[in-house]
Image (cartoon, rainbow, N blue to C red; front, side, top):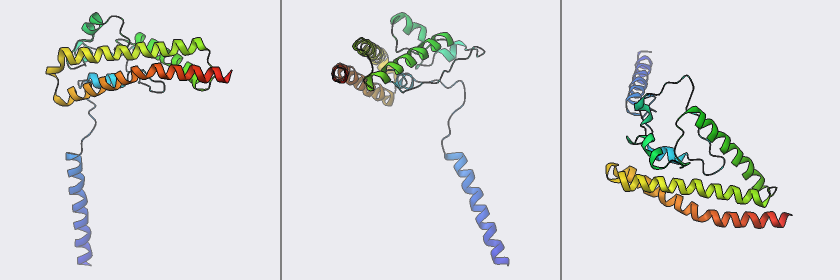
Length: 191
């Protein structure tokens, strides 16, 4: 009886100790609003490919102070807007702009659905892939700017991430022409 009680107490003690150690050493998602997203995370979520959704992070009742708006490694998004006024890869600055971007993404997703099901017109195919090309080129432009202007202030890991992304987006940009050609051929055969 005494031995089983000692064993149960020992097991309970081990479970408690393990729980405390897990709580201390297992990384947790930081929910602190002051933690800023890096440009890498924003670019990853760029809406250049259908099916990739980004949550609407803006709410009308949400107050954003200047610190919250400087989320890209201390780069002021307003400065990026001045540098690249028509760049579509920049994150939305307010809920109205985010809503417009969401509507554009939904429209492109519908067109892409018609393209892959061979129900789109040739004009829709041209328009869709031209738009994809523009968005991808905008992303390449931003990544080049970040690496050229601020690359030496980024950590090595972030610099490598940006360089990797830049390479991937350049490859994506060169592949769009082939995808457009293949889509047009498929649609012509389906007619």
